[in-house]
Length: 490
Image (cartoon, rainbow, N blue to C red):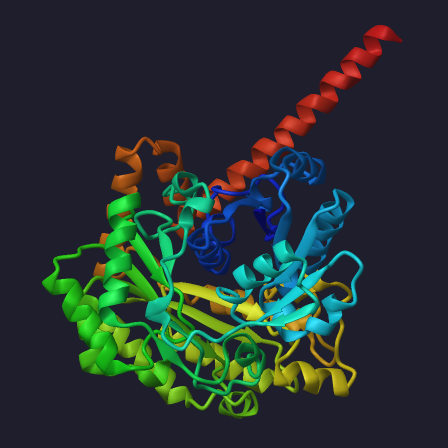
């Protein structure tokens, strides 16, 4: 029995985008890598088609014909729902068994279970459920269309993700992940989240359950060594929902990284009210160069409304600790929450001015299906999204009623201007210079120069001006040439 897994993540970035820099274009989906590893452990032949590496839909169809799997397993998340469904349609036309999984399938399985392109839906964790379903299909005993996954109580029991499904050399190219040495690879040390944020819960619990689970430090360190040894990466991103939930565990991990002399850059997703002086100092010492922090809003009224369970002062304190110890701040914050006023936007702007993050990542609030705020917006008839692609959280387009998006755009631009440039902090400066030296030595000289120009505001404006001027001059010359040719032949 041969299985082909499909990753359809091309929303916003499009076909032929894999390996061209940035998270969406480079980072691999660990869920499919875990499924692939468990299928291999059960002696099944498994491969993967990454839609980011396909030229178009015809290319996907040709690739499926060539590989000729018995079963296709397709990852469904909300923003790529339409792409995933198109993959299912093509697979079904080729008479393949189609299995849907992933977060969207887990949150609204009924939406897919009645679809003619989908044969089976796996809900929740699929590492054990998927191989069991394949066995049932082989025996002709798969009589249920919706299969509920078995929660993995001890995450150490799982094999490491089979990253070999992806073109890893292409994924970890250093292009497009400033200021880190390369694009690196992701690791998840835990599953679940104990917090109750209304923009996320209870959807997240439908995927991983309500219980927070964590792998042992020894197990995580073994995977870090495996990834570094096998792929020679210089950067790792821990993609746990909240990496710093358990301070004792994090301290032990950091101490082990130091004891084992594992020297690499790494980052993690954290939460502002889980950080303290001792923890941040230890993170820095162990190689952490950046923390992804969800500040969300500078308005306490908005923070309370979304059940974030933090204060604005928590955010400012966390940022102060990061700056003191030389850890970059990747600031996530949302604009356009339901009921947000200009006073709330001013409060967020004032918070960002105090924090001055090195990497600023504003988004427009999107009510994701399965979350409490999605139900709130739907009940109040606030939803404006016309397609699943509209659920992208990028700060563009109108998401809900009652929000002045022109006002949001003005404040977004003001907030982005408050980011700390690379030369103004010693830690940021060292990271940037080390990265550009690495790019230069690895033969990415043009990329290093381009990144330097675009990362330096004054030079960036000059570069943008020259690009526009060259474009206008080129169009003018083409039109003049066309007029001359027309005059000659008339």
